Image: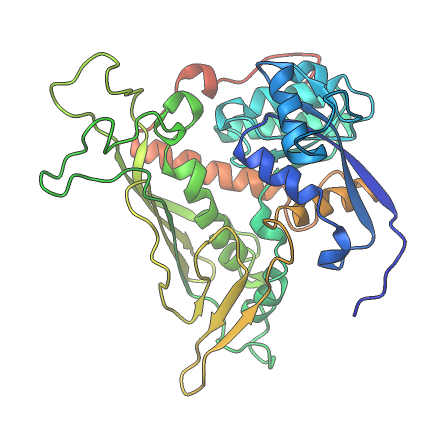
Length: 399
């Protein structure tokens, strides 16, 4: 059993937005770090902000932090705007959990207010926006990280050790990685089997955020980013690749509205990518990643392979190694409490405690590379979001 050490730092968080992922993240922040054998950092939520009302922030605090019957005038400050949150002096770091379309302006505002930031993925809508945020954070000497929680699961380090071991090492169980298959798909609606079309309302959920281009919807930025992340961890981070950026080839099928329907009766908001397939070619190592993502079908539970990461791809609690002539070996790294979002929070706390501006294992350069890959996929697929969420803010004071 791990020996308890004195906690070195308590990181004080402000939660920006009150949706589902913010609730999961906040709940994980409140779990006892010792339950995951963490004793050097801890977390405290000191403020919560809703963009629409103080009441929503108060409800969030009662439901997630202090208990349903608590007094709304709690020590956790409820803010009725994101600007108010940035103005709370006690906040060390802001967790940005707004829709993808709002990440860029929200993070820029937080950095402008002198706050460290952990921003939900995708970091931004495009690579230019990510580059701008990186420039601002580095100029202001503030910590900035994309919340790619998958990278911080305990299973990742031993898996990487197996995959990237020298060929002469006993840990090189399956040899060097040559090909990776990754799929992350969700069935957001149910097709009408008899006609092959998607009926409005009961069949196709046009009201879902993933079907809304003004929110940065579609499969690629929300789900496909995990497939690209695995390709980066397994193939791009292979020491033999020496950091080479892969060649991108892709195909995209976008949503289509049923013929004969007009107006907003069915909730249609515009095209997003419904199915996207990507091939990443790493020419230095001769390795290839075959990636797929969809809003129409769910990833099968078992894809098979030499090393299998079971559903769900973003939450890698185990991996199974299959070697010819030997029994399968399954390595389990279960989340002791919560969802598993606390490990990325721990990484933020350690980096800020140690005076670092980036987190080990989730660099800003890697986030920028992923955004550039997704930019190229959207370019090849002919998908552009509304100009107001693709644009770059020009602010001489922040650049």
